[in-house]
Every structure is written in structure tokens, then in C-alpha cells.
Image (tube, rainbow, N blue to C red; front, side, top):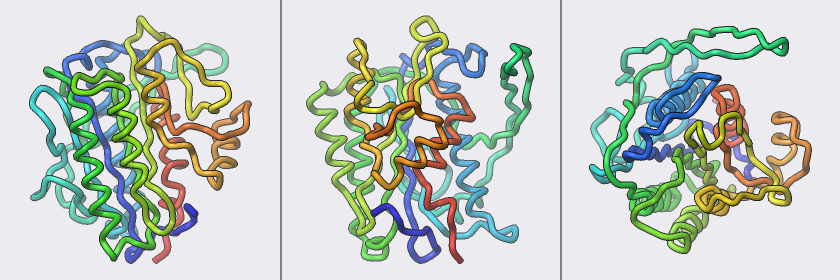
Length: 289
């Protein structure tokens, strides 16, 4: 299980789910800089999409290795955030035709000696920050469930690496309680291809006054504890990392504890986000023509 290589015949799907509610106006620290959580969410999403487009590039051409979607939820309801001519999944080959203008980001990083080093990097602005109105998380995840169910039911995808859902949120929800959220998360992760069940990763963002320096990536089930109900719900909603990926997490993230791990990250840095994508879509690193 979770061993399938990604090819242009056995493709996979990556779905981003992004909280755009008013609570995302709160500020947090990322790489020592205070930013609104809405901007952090957009930056992380743009980083992921850029990375996926580049991974699909072969000889200056973007190959059709996977489908991508970005679903936003806010006071405006549920909406597709990517350019294109559809409301759902779009092939990476087609998405690359809509490449937006890049934006320069500056992040501060500390050396082991405590010296600040500023790094500049470009990201294409696929998704713009949003922080408006209510938080219909449940309705958004119902939409995602329908998308992955349809994708997995397509006979062309039966032997593919299963979909990867990445949810970026501060944990607030205005349209459901814990029981409903856990139920819809299970319905998402119950969808599957012959290679395994859909993987559901939660990236949790919190205001700086809550967790100034707190960062936790794929915690072990045996050690994770929190008094924050939002954190606990997201932890429980997240996939248990497949056994086949546990050694990758242990080595790459220098974990102190063995698995099982939960596919959830709290206030991850940009570099840590890249590690998560390396883990969560390990087969995407091993394309075959």
C-alpha cells in the first residue's frame, strides 16, 4: 500500500482546502515575522502549487502527472480558488497554462549562532489572501469528499497513488461540531484507490499570542496532548500516517519518537511545509515516464 509510482497513466490528485473566514485576520509569526494568518495560508498554498507544477516539469514541458484543486471557504461560501474553466480538479498540465505573475517574499531565518539571515524567493500568486465572514468548514469538506469520491471512482484512477487533501486552517468552524467534523473527515479518508486510502493532512495556524514559538510536525499519537479543543479536533481528523511512510518521517523530521504519527502540523515554517509535501506525496518524487 502507498507504493504506486506517479505516471502520466497512473496519476494522483492533490486538493488544498483553505480557510478564508474573518478569524484569519489574526496575526501569527512565520520565520520570525508577524503576518495575518490569511496571508500565511495564501503563501503556503502558493508555495505548494508552485512546487507541484515544478515537479511535473520535464524538458521545459509540464507533464500531466496529477490533478490539483484549491477550495476556499468563508462568508462568501465555498469556492474554487484556481484559475481555469472548471470548479473542481484541474490537470497540472492545464493549470500551468494560467501561470500568474510572481511575487517576491522575504523571510527571516536564524542561524545556529542567532544571527538573522534574510532570504528572498518568488512565488506565483495562484491564490490571494482572504479573511471574510463565517467559517463553513464542514460544507467545504463535504465538497472535498464528493471530489475525491468521484476521482477515486473513475476507472482510470483505480491503480493510482490515492488523493492527498491538505487543509489549512486556524481550527475555527461555524457550521458543525466535533462529531460532524470527525464524521466527514472519516468519509474523506474512507475513499481509496487500490493503492490506499485518501490521505488527509491538516496544517494548523494560530495567532502569535497563543503560540509564539510553537511548531510541531506530524506528532506521535502516544505523545500528543492539548487543552485546545480546536487543535484536538484537527488532530483527530487527520490521517494516521501509513506504516510505509513512518521511516521517512522519523528520518526526515528527526523525530524523537516512533509512530504511529498523525498527519497534522502546527505552525510549520516554509521549510517544514516542504518536508510535509515530500512525505505526504512521496510517490510524486519518483516519477516514471
